[in-house]
Image (cartoon, rainbow, N blue to C red; front, top):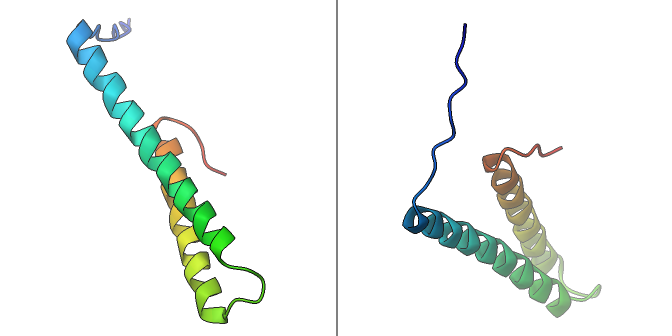
Length: 78
């Protein structure tokens, strides 16, 4: 017979610390999106190819961060 492992009950202080850490991670991801949006708005379709390559690099980096963020929380990135 296998016994199911009981989930650890956190103390109020530990739960608060965990909530603050998760909130901080969410804010960091939000800031990444805001910066990416500002960069995209600063560039227009007549921008030089070099600037568009920089934007593409930022997009790839942000997508990678999002995928890692989702996977760390048990989600699946597809």
